[in-house]
Image (cartoon, rainbow, N blue to C red; front, side, top):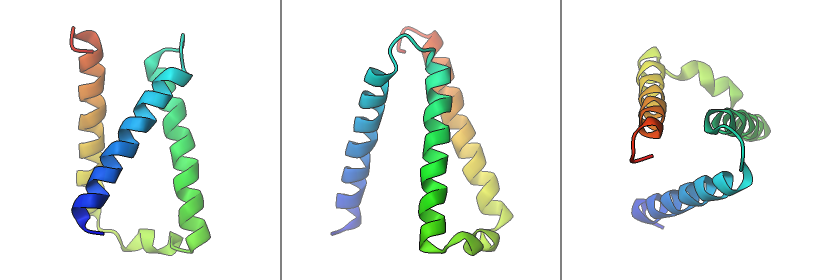
Length: 89
């Protein structure tokens, strides 16, 4: 498969996760739902890393990569919170 197929599958499954997550957390504050979902994702991600034995590779990632990835994630969270308060959300 090419990278484009993987990108489309990633978008599809990302959308499914968002839709199913929204259906599953009715009557729960959306920030709380995101926090709970994030904790579950972290556990699964670390489980996969540990099962594959790639935990030691974490120390090989540069500070530059951590910094820019963190800013990207923070920006995405900020946009989501701002959209909640607007008519678009």
